[in-house]
Image (cartoon, rainbow, N blue to C red; front, top):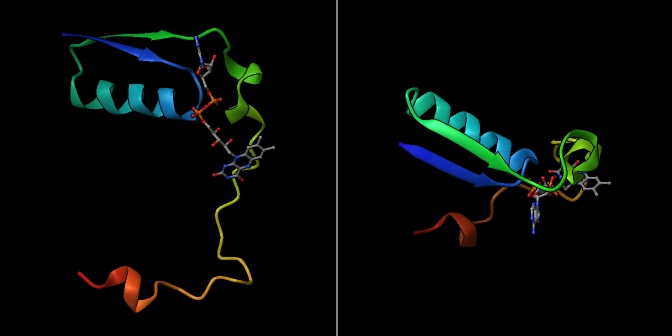
Length: 64
Ligand SMILES: Cc1cc2nc3c(=O)[nH]c(=O)nc-3n(C[C@H](O)[C@H](O)[C@H](O)COP(=O)(O)OP(=O)(O)OC[C@H]3O[C@@H](n4cnc5c(N)ncnc54)[C@H](O)[C@@H]3O)c2cc1C
């Protein structure tokens, strides 16, 4: 099996990692015109926290 991934930002590299873990014998090729510090992902702050406006999931969002 041979996977081709377009992009070497967080989405592309996370996809590659997931595929590598799930298909350890597969060949994975990443194609991109920008790598490492030239990607948007490299400069992202990566802040994941509830903000002051966070009130949790509403009933409308969670109901099936
Ligand atoms: C200043 C800043 C701060 C941020 N802070 C946060 C944050 O705190 N939390 C958060 O969740 N998000 C944050 N973001 C958003 C986050 O950075 C992006 O949503 C995320 O990095 C996008 O990842 P990506 O892999 O989709 O794209 P990118 O990192 O942009 O990677 C795209 C890849 O695709 C390749 N590519 C694209 N088009 C082509 C083409 N035509 N041919 C060849 N290769 C191509 C590029 O070369 C690159 O390798 C921030 C963004 C910025 C700018």
